[in-house]
Image (cartoon, rainbow, N blue to C red; front, side, top):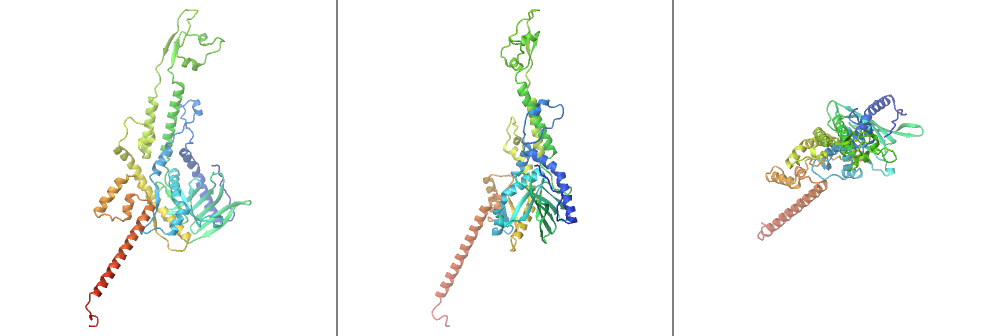
Length: 474
C-alpha cells in the first residue's frame, strides 16, 4: 500500500483548500494505525519480542496466528443483511431493485461491515456513474478508512464533510478523489498537468452523499472502535511467542538431553580426527565410549529429564481464554481443545454476548443503509422515494424448527398475524421468499374478491327472477 496522496489541488478556493488539508492530515494521522490493524487481520503482523523471551534464531521462524481475523469474522458472520424491505410492507419498486442488482448491494454490505469491524469505521458514497463507459446511473461504492476520512457534525448526527480517494485494486495508485461538504461534491482527477478539480456537483440535500458506518460509536469517538484493539494485538503477540517457544523446543529438545562424566575430546572424533556432529550424538540409539587409556576410568553416561510441552500448552490455553473473553467469542472457537467439550447450553451462553453485539450492529449500520438507499433513489430519478429498511438475519441463528415453533405459538395466541413482516422476520425468510408470499397473498385476495362479486351477482339475479309476474308494473 505505497500510496502517495496529493498535497496541491488546482481549482480549489481558499475554504476548500483549507478543508482538504484538514481532512488529509486527519487521514494520514490515522492511516498508520489502520494499516497495522489490516496487517493483523491478514496475519502479516511482525513479531514483537520483549527482549528475553526469544533467542535471536527465532527471527527466522515464521508463525501466523489467525485470532484477529477470527475476532472480526466471528461477529461479521452474525451481522448479515439479507436484503431490503419496504416499511409499508409492499414489494420493492423497480428502482430500488435495480439499485440493489447493479451495485451488488448484498456483497457490498458484507465488505462494509467487515471493514468497519477492522478499522472501526467505513464509508459508503452514492456517486453518479458514467453511462458512456457502461456504468450504471447510480453507483454505491465503499471507501475503507485507510483511504477515506471525514468530519462529524455532532449537532446533526451526520458527516458534514468527507475526503474519499478512489484507489486501484492493488492499492498502488489513486484514480481520482472526492471532496464533499454540505451542498457541494468536488471531483478531483490527475493528468499531465497535475491534480485539479474536474467537476463540481451542487445539491440542496441536507446530507452529503456519503454515510459513516461505525462500530461502537459514542460521543467521544463518533468514528467508532476497532475489533482489533490493543488487547487483541497484545494477546496475539503473546500467542505467537508461545508457538515459537514450543516450535524451538520441539526442534532442539525433542531428544532427552544426556551428560557424560570422565570423557575426553578424542572420544567424540571420527577416524580422521574431525568432530562428530552433535545431532548424531543426540540421535544415536547406542553410544559406545572407550575406556580412558591414561587413567583406565570408564566414562559415566546419564540422562536429564525430558522437557515437557505442558507449560506451553497451559500458557496457550490461558491466552486463548483471555482472547475469547476480550472478543466475546466462545473459547472453543480459538482452536484450543479442552478435556471436556462444551455442551449446547454452554455454547449458547458463550455466544449470547456476541449476539447482543450483532443486534447493536443492526442499529449502528441500519440507519446509514437507509440514508444510502434514499439518496440513491433520489439520484436515480424524480419519482417517489420508497421508504425501505435493511432486512437482517437473526444473529443467534436458531434452527428452522425452533423458529417455526415460536412463530406458530405467537400466531395461535393472536399476538402476531400470520402474514405479518414480524412473523417473516422470526422465520428468517429471505427477500425472495417474502416477495413470493406477498404475491400469493394478493392472488388469493383477488380470487376471494372475485368469488364474492360472483356470489353477490348470482344472489341479485336470483332475487329478481323470484319476483311474481307484474310486480314491476305494480
